[in-house]
Structure formats: C-alpha cells, structure tokens
Image (cartoon, rainbow, N blue to C red):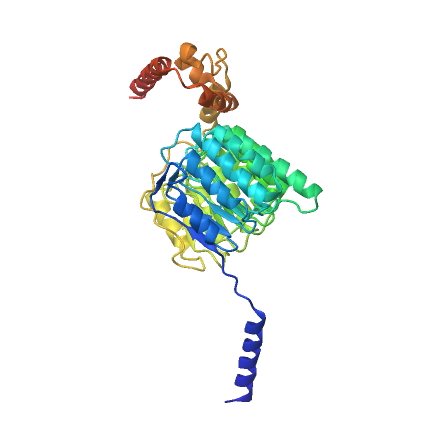
Length: 449
C-alpha cells in the first residue's frame, strides 16, 4: 500500500472516531388509522411513550384522538423532557371543533410541565379554525417553544387564527430574547388557510421581527397585493431564506415589484414558487431584472399561469442564464404565443442545465391587451373594502344578505369567522342562512353565464 493511501485512511479513521451519529428515539403510530376515544383506547400509545427512554419524537399522524385519549397521552408526556418533535398532523379527523381545543391544551400543558424544548410542531391537516389556534397560544408563549425551528399549520382553515399565531410568535420572540435565547424559527408552513391580507400582514410582521426564517410556505391563502407587499418586507429581513412558496395568491405588479426588490436584497434563495399568482408581464420583468443580479444559488423558479407576455418571459430567461445550479424554470400557461414559445425554448438552450426549462404546452397565446390591467384588480378590491351595514356573529343568521356578505372587508371576514365558530348552534337559523347564500351563489353563477 502506498504511503499516501495509508495516510488518507488514517485521516478518515481519525475523523470517524471524532464523529458521533445521533439517533432519535421515536414513538410512531403513523398511518395506523386508530380511533382513540377513551383512555383505554389510548393504552397502547401510552405504554409506548412510557417505555421509550429519552423520547424525542412522537408521531401520531393519521389517527383520530378524542379528549379523554388526548388527556391520557398527555399524562404520559409529563415526564418526557427530551421530547423535541411533535408530529401531529391529521390527528383529529371527525372530531368536533369544541373537542379539539381541549385536547390541544391538555397536550400543550403536558409539554410545558415536562420542561421539554420543542424543535418541531406539526399540526397540519386538522380542521382547526381560529379557536384551535387560540388553544396553541399558551404553548407558543412558553419556554417549551423558545427552541422551535419548524412550525407547520398547513390546511387548517385558520382564517383569523393566522393573526393569533403571528401575535403568539412575536410574544415568544420577545420573552425568549429577554432571557437571552431568542426564538430562531427556520420553517413556517401554513398553506390553504384563508389567511388573506390581514393574516399575511400579521405573519409578515412576525417573520420580520424573528428574522431567521429559511422556509416560508403560504400557498392558496387568498392573499392580494397588499399582503404580498407586507411579506416582501419579511423577505428583505430574512437573509437566510432558501425556500419561498406563495403559489396561488394574487400578486399583480403591485405585489410582484416590491417582492422582486426584496429578493434582490438577499442572496440565499434556492426555491421560489410564484405560480398561479397573476404576476403579469411587468411583475415578471421586475423579478427577472432583480434575480439577474442576486441569488446565485437559485435552483427552482415557478412562474406558471401568471398572464405573463413574451417580454416578461424573456426577462426571466435572461436572468436564469447565469444560474449555475438551476434545475427548474416553470413558465407554462402564460401568454407567449406560438412564436414566443419557440423563442423562450431557444433561450432555455442557453441555460447551464439544458433540461431546466419545463414544458410550455399549456401556453394561452398572445393577449390583445397590455396584460397588466390593474383597473380591474382595483375595482374588485374596492368592492371588498366597502361596508353595507355591520354583520356580527350574533346577527349573522337573521341579517345576512348577499350584499352585506360580499361587502365585508378581509379583516371583518376574519373576525366574523372567529366569532361564528362559537355560535353555530341554531340549526334552523343556519339552514335559513345557507338557503340565502345558495340563492346568492346561483344568482352570481347565472350572471356569469
């Protein structure tokens, strides 16, 4: 054996001796489909928790846990200070809205009692609403959450609960900072939650204050340009942001331009998803111009179905030519036209990776107008901001009309949703309101046809 080879082997051996591979202690009932109603039903889970030394991960995804079962599981967690990851997505299927907060508080109290230091909390795919967000506040305020790195509330129907979570995170950062160990949240996922502008603005404020986000995913939340502009401020103050997913919200150029400027001020982005966001041509041009001089490690850029005309697509392609690590550029479903599609494909051949440009098969053809009709967007938002009388939770079923409903502002809708979850008990009134709303829907459908 050559001396150099032996020297290399000795070096590797020495490095391995200094390296420790840490294995997490996991209790997982993922996908078992168990229906846990009583403490007795939860006995297997409780035994598994109690017998696991130094429990670090509890995974209950894909089961359904009732109040008494949750309390039994909570009892087993009170002496598990090593717990770091609570993977509790899809855990309350079929449970009443009134039950879930009680279960959440019991589990949260157990975590706080144990003095655990959480790293990840995943409560996705549970039908929460604002009330269940409230049930998480005490836990998020506590020392157990000072160490949180990943927070997932995907597809929870939060509505106004997004504001509640944002306020809780701001408070957590404040108190943790006062104790010399500020919250350094890295991942926040809350897609499909009807957050709208109020929720987006509140979360943007929280992200800006925390300043450590590496991944922000808020797709399908009905966020319009004002909320996107607020989020752009958060992006600008997140120097380590790698993954930004705002798919299926509504940018228009009013949101796309400030977001582009924000991205230009950081160099960490790897994945950007603005697909189905109505970015439009001027927005795409701004994004292209800003990415051309920033974010050299970009791997994926999604701008599909954004009503982008050819000049916007070319600006984006120009920006991608110098991206060494580019793997995907999605410009499908825009308005390039047949010749424009060919031109974009030609530009794709100049990328470092020849396969980065994705299919353009769903191109919608050249648009006859300028593609940036902001007047239409403004009229829609002006209507949403008008108030024709006041709707409250108590008066909703007796006073709701199509005019009043459509006239509510985003913030008013969020507040109303929060209040309504407490009061939906009158079946006759609820049925009457549903008939009114269905009549309104049929009227709108007929007009559209």
